[in-house]
Length: 146
Image 1 (cartoon, helix red, strand yellow):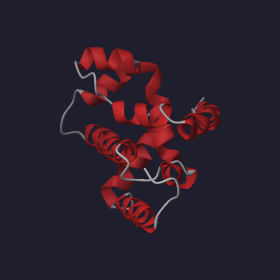
Image 2 (cartoon, helix red, strand yellow; image 1 turned 180 degrees about the vertical axis):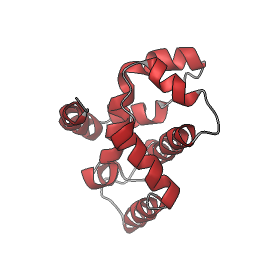
Image 3 (tube, rainbow, N blue to C red; image 1 turned 90 degrees about the vertical axis):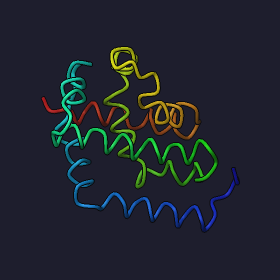
């Protein structure tokens, strides 16, 4: 991967940002950020296991989007430094932080060892990602409705 971001990296970030503005994706993102506050793996499975509901669609849409984008970083297609800018990937951390306590159990129960694996590898496999995780984790905890 190039050490410095390129014009192509910047263009890709803008294209990816534009995809996040699609109306259904906005609903999905809003649900993840404000409504879905899982307290157990069961909370995930209630959503994950009911195909065709808006919540199931939104769940899959957001984790698929961020999984694809994380794969770009992991494979050197997108500059890591640009990717981890809070204005772009802050939401990724919000989703991952909400999910992380339950990932092991979710992977076992869904028999999907790759569930959110790209998110995990991108965040925890990078100094930039780990630093942002450390900043974001207390913010996500504080945002949880009482």
